[in-house]
Length: 427
Image 1 (cartoon, one colour):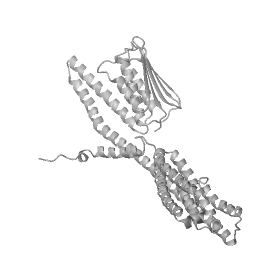
Image 2 (image 1 turned 90 degrees about the vertical axis):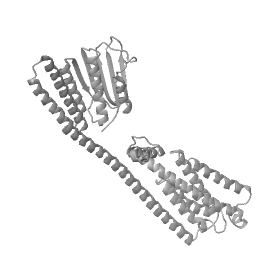
Image 3 (image 1 turned 180 degrees about the vertical axis):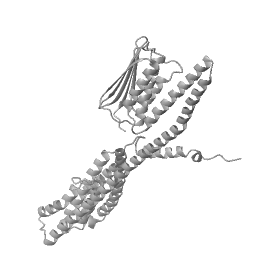
């Protein structure tokens, strides 16, 4: 007895779909994610990863700070004696943990991280300038300023955002002067050296960050283009296969129907053959229309107008077609939805409504595309659709899938109007 196959072996497409959906849910994205949304999600994930690294760096500094408070010689050097120093230490610990808790928030996480990093820088400046002897530009902690420049440049690679750590050096120099500490030539050289290192760090990190972001945006855009190209190629391939296969079969059926019609003598049989031929001709015309919609050069407005003319010639109904607005290219799904809804409305007007006149209006506006079909038939109650009639349900499902809306306005004896609207879409 064979063992049961694994689900992944029978349904690889389902497994792939599940993996894609898991990634989308983790990044809080939808199925119709755009290149801009994908890039924004990537930038947010990158920021969160770097902000978490900042938290662990803070924990290391806080550990060193606890050692400074615990060793009397060190705490005396910085003048940190008494309960106020411990309160300041625990305040740093609290806002560090609070920052970690809001890191994932798209806006609050960035603002809290930036403000808390500014507080860290302020405390560092105090540690550098506080000792009366060996402080200021002579402090061994002065090199920490370079670390803050690096952190600001990595997390917030914008010129104005990096300004606080760059101001730390002139502020330290000013504090030296206020504390009556003279600035020697060696200390001035130290200041210039650190300023040069700061600008090098800022330039390198901002440049690399911009190159990385640009490369990622290009890759995301290229992936979208490749996906669209693959869909177009597959659609064209299916169009060729359907044309060569099903189209050829329908053409053969029409030829055979014509041949049998010439041989038949009974009127009833000839009538059946004519209906079969007419059905085949209508099917091949529908096939050609669908194939045109699958092509990139399909013109929706002209296609709808041609179908209205064909339907009018076949049924003898008085149908008026009106087109307004500037025509623009729509995605294949939107084109198909507009055509199917028009097809369903005209079919209902001819078969059920017994309408004498039908008005069709196609409008392209800045907000979207609007199709309105109105007839003067016997009307119906939209809330009481007969069992087995799924035309209205199918139209609503098409509208819902594309994010559009459809309004059916009708009453017994008052005709019917179907208004289908799609938001602004582009191919």
